[in-house]
Image 1: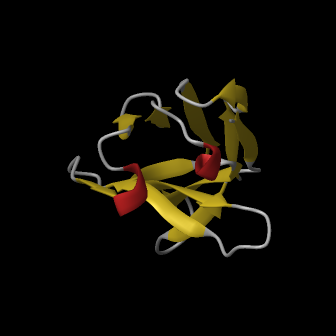
Image 2 (image 1 turned 60 degrees about the horizontal axis):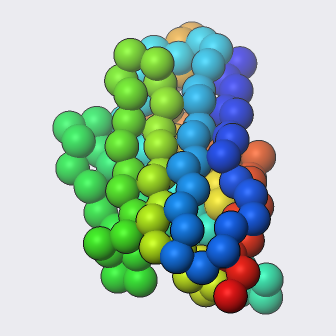
Length: 121
């Protein structure tokens, strides 16, 4: 079994900041890519940021320069530091981890439960 637990969402004024965390635990052999997605009301889920096992990062154009993704390899945690938040950043944020579980062949995508981020104007 693999569990993902997200934390760090909330309500913040425009220009403020939040840091999201996603911790993976359980029968994990290795973790490849980690990423954060968000889904605004009435919109499709979109990739916000991702980080590979080598530490290479990728960001959506809308968050470049404001958001930073990072990972703690020892603790199996991925973070999303969100600065200069805008109302359009509002949505439910989900972490996504590509995990190679113990006892199973291959890698699988695991999703966090989602955490609400609301940015007021």
